[in-house]
Length: 487
Image (cartoon, rainbow, N blue to C red; front, side, top):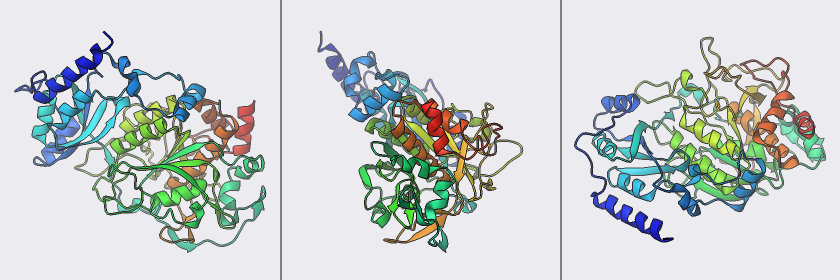
């Protein structure tokens, strides 16, 4: 009897592949959603990126918990900070028989996301109809993405030409150089003085690519894992495959760089894992199936903090997009994945976005709308909100962004150079500064829950007494947040 589930699974796989158990019906019982239908109407002969959701994970999903791959770190973090340490049905992989049956009917399988019980694929309209005929398919939907517009290039991180100058000085025994201001504004030196530098904390960066990891600022950095979700390999730098990126180089230097006299990040002694999630060769380069798969990977690898300086919202006609009304904390796929990670004890920090103020509605980009996600707005070096910083509230009325940090003229490593430095602007950079502080809080209070860490940062920020939807609870204060956690 113990061998029966394995035997049944083998029979199921064979039946699916032969097409005998799950034949494709002549008229699909389910239809494409409105967004996917519109995409095929605009490009009838095109190949679209499509989510395929399954009805279940097989007849006895919990009998397959042995297939769940979680690192020892991930299991310990779940038990210590998650809402429940046990492996659940959500963690069980997609049933291989279902995935293989879909793979036979589409052009390519892109990502598998067990938390959603879905795979993303590339398929024509006819192929989608064939998939819809499979009885274990619950629905199909289009993969959303973000298409950068020309005016986004500077806010989202194109480095300014101005070189850094030697300002600032030694604090907490470190020579922060020009980066002193961006750290002092949020109270980082106070935690450094306590011996908190990120030791024992694992941080995952989800970004466009990391083209200059040979820069001196990364020489002492511990990078233990890398994954390219665009090309399906372990090379997150520029190469001969799709996508090039320097954005990750800059955000990584912001959070964890170590070059005394030039740039020091808040969590310079943390351990890092890097995920390339943006296809810069695509018309919609930032695609949320890559982000969701990367979040799942980071959680299973043992990440304590996810720092993501990407947002998912499209305004261009002809591309499937979310709207401000979808920023409700439960609609966008990336938001749902971020929430799953947070429920498992990962502190998820995301840039609020660079769409500025609109009096009619929020300008957030997913997953910044998540209830458990710390969405970060941007201020100048003097603490004033910068105009490009996205605003809330979320579509269901919650205050967003949550907090803020410097996002204008932030000192970063200059990509393409071995030892150059420059300045860059955008909530892309206020995000890693905040994520670095979150990592120091995790180090100091490893049993604190995601909610407690978020509450500590919000309740001690500069405008915690009168939060608004421009900067949320205001500029974070690392020292006061630690005191709040201690109490």
